[in-house]
Length: 355
Image 1 (cartoon, rainbow, N blue to C red):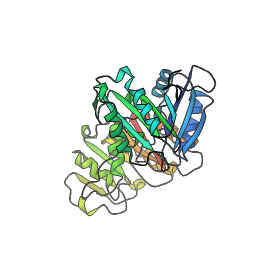
Image 2 (image 1 turned 135 degrees about the vertical axis):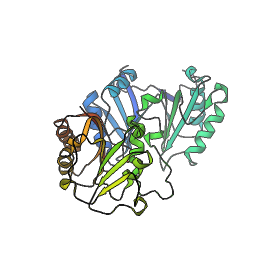
Image 3 (image 1 turned 90 degrees about the vertical axis):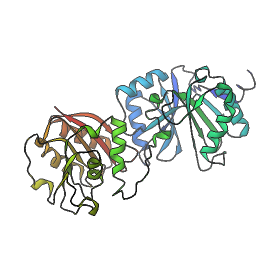
Image 4 (image 1 turned 45 degrees about the vertical axis):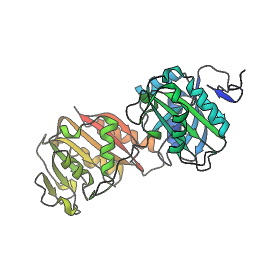
């Protein structure tokens, strides 16, 4: 065993099983137990240890990496936001970082490619500086691979997680990580005059689900006030009907493409097939929300899209989500994705198409 391999463990397999693979897994804060349950349902027994309570854990799966990628693509998880492979584990410290640089320099697939180095660290990490400074340090060490270091559209992602006494790293294609953002944390810049951060949910949904909101013409926004989602849709060029007894934001007053109905959603009536997009982001009981929205689906044209958030007010969210999805499916809605986005809090987002 050479000096490099004497200090690091590559593709560690505690059970001596060649089909074992390991990942650092990330969920929204407080939802890691549900991400772990999703993995158990797909892969059977999952050995895991927490790296950041309620959010980040190290998981050992009884499957080869290619099989993990295939299964997660076929059955996308709701709460598991991001995974990064652990192909190398080392003790913490400067020497470990030097060994990591040597290890990455030997990875032939990185030669001459577009590479994103994504670094995360714990508060008590052995690396005291910022993640950005560690990324720059690694880039300087990897000059010999003749790679183009980038943030957007990389061919490969080098993922590094620096904990208190351990260093974890892996190389993967962006699509194999569930998200090409570092830790799955997609961030947008808040704009001057932005009504609320709720707008970020639709912006993220657009990227995550591949929904081009600008392709729709007429939208119904249920529970719209103060207007974060309405403002986003207006910016995309849609005509929007906003329903809410509360007042909309002053900046939306007299907008020529906006019709505001200051009523409860249960009191309004529309023409059949009047809209090609329906959205709802109500802070309300999920079952009552689903009953209210399904009661208005007659106004959504066949082939139309619905984007709805479901508040998770109960202790068994997986069972609740299954029940809510069944309510929508019973009304000719085909669930395309159910996902807890980075900008969701105690909720998930449903993306549906009417048939």
